[in-house]
Structures are given as C-alpha cells and as structure tokens.
Length: 281
Image 1 (tube, rainbow, N blue to C red):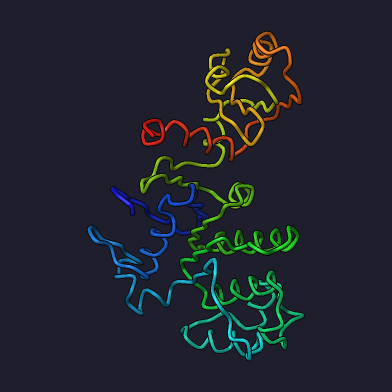
Image 2 (cartoon, rainbow, N blue to C red):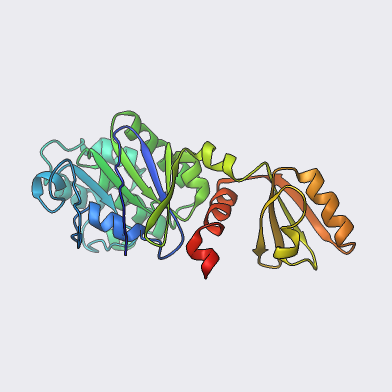
C-alpha cells in the first residue's frame, strides 16, 4: 500500500529506494514496471503506460528472485533475450559488464547463487535500457563481485541511464546512489543525497552495554536518538564527549563503549524513529 506518492526517476542518476520491510518499496517498483496498475493516480514510464511494449523495450529489470531456464547456456539465454530489443549491446560487451566472460558455455542449472545473480544482471542490461531497475542486485554475491557490479552500474548512469536501486545493504546504497529516497508506511519520508541524510543523524553514534533504558539515555546532553540494537544501547549524538561524560556519571557499570561517525544506516534509523506513525505505535 502506498499513498500520496510522487516519485520521479531521473536520467544519469542512481536513485536508491530504501525503507523497512512493508514500507512500500516493492509496490513502487511493481507500479513503475507495469506488474501492477495503480488504484488511483497514474504511473508513467517514459510518458507511457508501463504495460505498453514501447515503454517496456526501454526498461531493464533485475528482480530479487527470478528463475533461469536450466537447460540453456548463458550464451543461448542472452542471445535469446537480446533479440527482444531493437538495439541490444553486443553479446561480448554484455558478458564483460556482468563478469560472465569465462562462463559463456555453462548451463544455468550449474551456476552458483552469485553467478546466477550476474546472469540476471546481464539480462537486465543487454537491451541498453534507459531505465535500469535493480532489486537487491548483489544478494548472494561476494563483496569483490559486488564492487565490480557497482562499477558497471555507475558507468551506465554516467552514460545517461536512469537507475533505480532497492537494497537492504546500506553500504551498497551509500556507495552507488546520487539520491536516496526513504519510504515508511507507504509514504516518502526523505529524498536527499547520502551526505545530506548522514548530516541529519548528528556527528557520532555511541554503542555500549548499559543498565540505562533508551528513554533515560535520551535525556543526556546532545542526544538526538536512543534505542536498543540487540544487547547494545545505541545513541545518536551531536556531541559525543558531552554525552559520554553524562552516561558514565549516570551508569558507573557502563561497559564496551564504542564511538564512531554516523553512517547512512544510523541516519535512516534516526529518521524512521521520529515518524509520527511509529511514535504513535
């Protein structure tokens, strides 16, 4: 369910769509790609109904979960997929961008999870899409393979493609995105650059083991947000020194104290914690 949603994806830019489970991200992607139709309002893809072939030919999609035909080789599958587009990438270029050059004759049934994700990526980019939608693109990939994929996504955006990324890996979103859109309960609650969102979180994040409740910790000087992260007390603060001094004065048994700069994950967690729907829950 989404409501009062106004989201445009711009050419030459990587837009990361982030939020907790149930925030509405999958619905947004489904509306944009024509998998579902809106109950009210409109969804436009290049000014057309997303379900029209003329719009779909300019779209590349890498879904979080999708099957591959076991009996086809990678070359056979990509050749077949490329035939649906008026001006596909040369096969060798698609294979190189997806890191599949050494696997061209391997059947899809024999692929590892990470290799299968690279094939899904190749299928998404082979038609030279003007809009590339990537849903958890590096799931099942090792970090080295993920970084290679990030480089090719960045290059496609630099060449003018619009890229929409959904990911639970916030380091991935931070590394790739020019723009981050945060959703919660079907609405957009932030739309800004990664640096601007990090700035909202304050200067530092303190993690420690303490007898203090988050509510008590929130009363310490300069604290912007306090909550539990597993067994740790997690505090976002604009003045780590003042906050730590107050915590130590209040809880002499405080232990395992760690202070670090705020990350994108910290910023989004702080943002979501202040939403009216969550405060009322």
